[in-house]
Image (cartoon, rainbow, N blue to C red; front, side, top):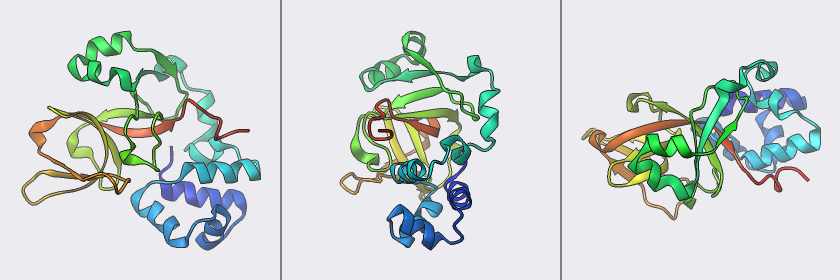
Length: 211
């Protein structure tokens, strides 16, 4: 998938708009909100999807780097294990056993994804809603980028979903929530068991996306 800046530029092109102000007005958001989407590489997908519905825009054409490539991929390589909230503890205790018995779905995404983790806490709301699945790929901690959201598997803490802010002077990592009701998260490298970057978000219930 494209990053937020590319999606915004492509959406303007598909809509025949020239400025961010015009797009912000169409999305019914403030211009500075649109600017923050670019800076933080995040978007309100519900607003974008609603405009696409109204304007008859193909979501594949908007979000995928090469829209036609999704139909040519080997689907067997796009099988993703889905870890529900009820199985977070099981994954934390024994990942291999949990993955072996977890249900799988096929997502013909252009980018490779490994595991789908279900969101069970509202700390990333409204960016990611509870019960949604984040489709993720495992990375090294050194690959994390500021303002991107990650799935964290931390010793003594379990599976968490937070936005990376920066590395502190003492070498610890500072993460924040998109929901102001939740505290920030600070931990050291020794606490990290696994890190996953988020490739896409999947909402099992689509009643709010299509009529």
